[in-house]
Every structure is written in structure tokens, then in C-alpha cells.
Amino acid sequence: MTRTVFVNGHYLPEDQATVSIFDRGFLMADGVYEVTSVLDGKLIDFDGHIKRLHRSLSELDMAAPCSDDDLIAIHRELVRLNQIDQGMIYLQVTRGNPGDRSFVFPAADLAPTIVAFTQNIPNLADAPAAKTGFKVISVPDMRWGRVDIKTTQLLYPSMAKMMAKKAGVDDSWFTENDTVTEGTSNNAYIVKGNRIITRQLSTDILHGITRAAVLRFAAEAQFEVEERPFTISEAQDADEAFSTAASIFVMPVVEIDGKPVGSGKPGPVATRLREIYLDEMRRAAV
Ligand code: PLP
Image (cartoon, rainbow, N blue to C red):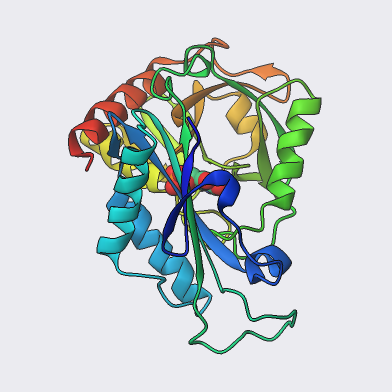
């Protein structure tokens, strides 16, 4: 089945969907994106993703490409057309095509480019990796200073993912001044006893939509939540570690820089939070 994608108001077969070479997303990474997961054919935490999209757009002085009703309709139509039961929907909005290359932003009334497509992942909720956990390495955080804005500038995270691959592990955790900021495409946590520790929100990390939900569920389940930086050695000595993102939900982290965390297997807290997250979010899906 050919994938049907959305580009600037049209649903098209993926091989017929095109964007200009002058698009600022292509030339300048002048664009923002969201990734929403789909379970049982429904959107997970869509409201959170739309709110963060608006925040990213407004931090970059970009206008919304269409109404929120249109955005949900596009997502639902892509799910329907591509018969997605489990998977992801990628949405990207760029500052558009000014018809040439210039560092100066084009006029504010230039139409943005909006693109969306599905990724069909039939075992997303039941990913084998969740049973074995991720192994990670630490790498210096060399990204720009506004990683709280979800821009399409993903070269360094992509390089860090390749460093992990080369080291034979699953992901990298970024460090800055000895403390962990976040993973290449996820937020990072450690567990000590009944306490869940994760870096506080700032311009140093992406304000994960999964993070917000998981911390809320953790507090409801009587875990203590402490938002502060932690070091790699503190993480290696923790009882458990895990990462969160829309694409992996709650993913146990079982090894950091070659050292096992806790038992070296997915721990009870990460496993429980993953179950709670999946149950609650499936119930609230739209
Ligand atoms: N941190 C970074 C750098 C990310 O790229 C992502 C997701 O892509 C996250 C955290 C997790 O965010 P969310 O839970 O909204 O998927």
C-alpha cells in the first residue's frame, strides 16, 4: 500500500508530494515539528503536542499554519487513509518558500509549508526493546542553546545516535558540565528508592509531552518526583534509569557507559510507569 501524505492542503501518494528547494525548512532548518503516537487508531496526548507546537511557533515568530481543528482533522485523515492502528504521525511546519535564499526572514504573511506523514509501527506499544531496555553512552551536549524549541535542526542528535550505534548501544544521553541534559530524542530519568529524578524544565531540554504525563502519573502513584540535574555516575549508581518520548513511551535504561544500572534489567518502577502510561493514555486517546 502506497503511503498517503499531507503537503500544503493536499493528500497525495508519497512519491508525488514535493516541497520547493527554496523552502526555509530545507535551506535553514527554519521549521518546527511534532511527533504524535497512535494507538488503537487514536491520537495519544494530541492536546499536549498542539500546545507545544504553538509554543515552538511563537518562540520563532511563526504564525500557526491552520486552526487546531484542521490539525486534528489532518492527523485523523492520515490515520484513516493509511489504516494505522499503531504508529506515529510526523508533522512539520516551516517558514515557507520565499522563492530565494536569504538569512532575513520573509514577510510574515508568507504561507508556511505544512507537511505530515504516518509511520506504521504495528508493535509500538509492545516494542521488544522495552523488555530488554536501552543501553546508552554519554556524549557532550553540543546542540544550540534553545533546544526547548522543537526545531528540525537535528544534525547533532543524529550524530549522537550514530555514536551510539558505533558503540553498539541504543542511544546517547547528552551531558553538560557533568550533568545529564536529556537523550538524543527523549527525556532522561533515574530512580532512587521511591524517588524519580529528572532535570528541571529550562532552555536546556525539550519540554517532553510524555515527560509531563509520566511525572503526573508518578505523583498520582505516590512516587516522589525531584526535578534537578544528575550526573552520569549518580545515574550508574541509581536503582533504575529510563527515558521517555512519544516514540518509546517509558523505556528502561539498563546500562550507561558500559556499567549496568541496578540489576542490569528493566526495573519495577520503569515497568510500572510504562504500564500506567499506556493504560491511561489509551483511555484518553482521541
Ligand atoms: N527530548 C528531545 C531532544 C526530543 O527530541 C524528544 C522527542 O522527540 C523528547 C525529549 C521527548 O519529547 P516527547 O515526550 O514530547 O516526545
